[in-house]
Length: 92
Image 1: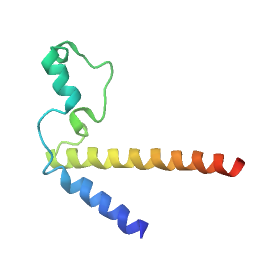
Image 2: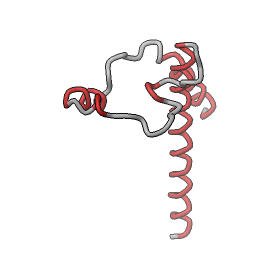
Image 3: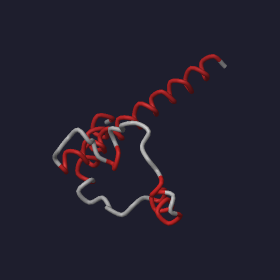
Image 4: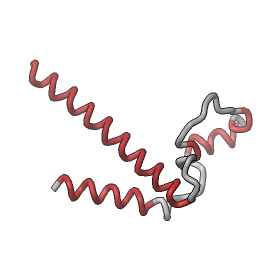
C-alpha cells in the first residue's frame, strides 16, 4: 500500500507542475510589495532557485525535477522525525 501511495505522490509532483501557478508565493509577493525584493542578492548558487532545477534546461523537466526533489526532501525529513520519535518512545 505504501508503494502505491509513494508512486501516486511522485506522479502528482511530476504532473502538477504543469498546472502550478506562475504567480509569486506569499514571501515573494511581500518582498515585491515592500520593495525588499529588488535589494536581495543571492549569496551562493542554489539548485532550486525559482522552483526549478537550474542545471536542467527543459522547462517541464526543470520544474518537475524541483518538485520531485522537494518531495524527496520532505520524505527524508519525515522519516528522520519518525525515527527520532520512535527512539524516544522506546527509551521511555
